[in-house]
Every structure is written in structure tokens, then in C-alpha cells.
Length: 114
View 1: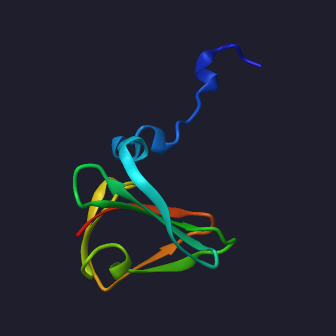
View 2: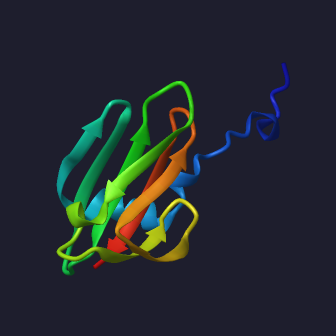
């Protein structure tokens, strides 16, 4: 076995270096489960100082699955603006239902703005 530290590099998970995910972790409030439909579980939290929310949706199953979130559960209206925190990019506006195919044991993490 080599003693060279260069051979022991550990890949840091993206969540540990993503400032938007760190902010969500450190500054979110009123974190709560939004729903659980079988193996699809959604959690929501408030963003401090504004009407925005964080939304995390998890697929707990062994196969990919479509998650469907009625926007009426997320905001007063049925139209929201979505930012993908994992990808650090704006998705855009969504109306009515938010639908996302999530891989097995995967998740999506959004910041939503009414």
C-alpha cells in the first residue's frame, strides 16, 4: 500500500460543496413532511425572510418512479417558479402539477417561489 496522500483522495459529495444546499440545510425553518404516497415522500420547509419554500421529494423504491406534487399543496396558487438546487439552475415556471421521474433511491431538491 502506498503512503502517498495523493492516492487517498476522497470524492466529496456535491451536497457538501453546493452553497445553495448548505444554505437550505442551515437556514430552512418549519421543516415538515408534506406527504407520503407509497414510496414517494415529500418534505417542505420555509425559506427565511421570504415566501419561497424548499421542496425535497424522495423515491424510496427499488425502481424509478414518477412523483406528482399538486402545486396547490406548495403555495396559495397553482403556478410556481422552480430552481433545482442539486443542478444549480432555474427550471422555470410550472402550473397545476409538478411531475418528476426520480431514479431508484433518488431525490430532487428544489427552491420554489410562488
